[in-house]
Amino acid sequence: MIRLFKHYVPHAVLFLGFLDFALLIAAMEVGYTLRLHQLGSLVEPMRERALQLFVYAAALEIAMVAVGVYGADALQSLRRATARILVAISLGVIFLSVVFFLSPQLSFWRSNLLYAMGLSAVALIALRILLGKLLGGHVFKRRIVVLGAGPRAARLKALAAQPGSAFVVVGYLSMSESNRVIPEAIARDAIYNLADHVVLLNASEVVLALEERRNALPLKDLLRIKTTGVHVNEISTFLERETGRVDLQSVNPSWLIFSDGFSSGRMLSSVFKRLFDIAASLILLAITGPIILATAIAVKLESKGPAFYRQRRVGLYGVGFDCIKLRSMRVDAEVNGQAVWAEKDDPRITRVGRFIRKVRLDELPQCWSVLKGEMSFVGPRPERPQFVEDLEQQLNYYAERHMVKPGITGWAQINYPYGASIEDSRQKLEYDLYYAKNYSPFLDLLIILQTIRVVLWPEGAR
Picture: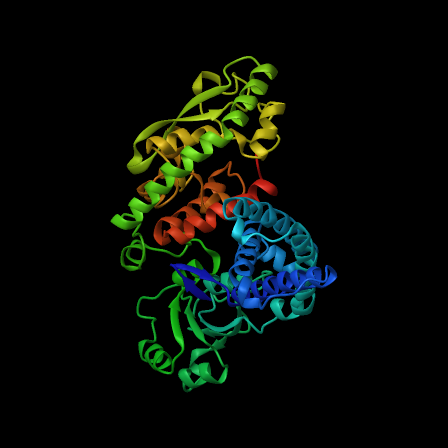
């Protein structure tokens, strides 16, 4: 993987993205040239429209990121990739229409765009057909050796077997664990020179997955491996990189303290984030005001009670604030104000409420909380005080998620379905800690773009 602004991007995704960008430029150029030849017009040199070609390719590339064309599911399924490419091209052209309105000098004829859209769709889908086996094979996967043969090593084995995994395990080494669960692991005593063994396996990384590291770390071996140019990582860092989560089963306080990250409090990043929140919330409130009003009327007509409701949530540093949302449940959804987890097909949700939850319309009034500074556009989902009290007792490091502002959307929201249990909260906490640890404006932008995918394909909404 390649690390971009603290976030890891698989080599296969980066390679495919570069090819897609080149194909989009080529498709626009061919479409432009073809249309002008049909009209009998003279075609100027390509450099005369280089900026226009770049804007076209960039707009569609951003749309492809937004709808999840580079997600693991789309990389593994041609059907999903095709559907998302077609949606991305449509959204990209809509975005281009806005750009062309603001900067007419960048615009193409509508017939040019129509040709380019068709050629782009064919080229992008054909590329995935040609590279299907290559992207899903071992060509782009890193070869790793796992030092350990216990349950932690078994977790890496299961992760490597998942579709879209970016690595392949080429060897397991047993360090005389009492709870050995990897039968194919080779005993350390059977290998004379561990560094030579790793090099012969053509491994690029060794991952420490020992159940007990005290008096078990082969420091001399690891030093020799490191000096051969092979990376050495322990399992917590490896899992953070591969899964986009902070793995609560393997981390300890010292890892959180001494690992890099948790720099969201830096002055420049904080100022940039706040300025973006103010501008975006003002724009969204202005644009979606009529939608909020129409939805409020629909909520009011369907069921008795207010269209909006206030609910106490826990914000930055554990300070409470009132969150405003469009009401999606009956007014008697919670007896005596007792907080209750939402369930799948929850009978308390109204018909209008079910729809606005799926398309996230109920979240729009939270822009007011963003404008006031109680929330940010991107951050962990703010929870209710009753849930927070319980979760802090049952989940380690849960309080640390409150070291950043809560958000309307976030890393957990785009990567995990709606949570309604302790286990769901644990999974989402791992994503929230990853966001708090690796925050950057680039990650915020990626989350905002990927939120479009969640709205278009609302898996897990409750």
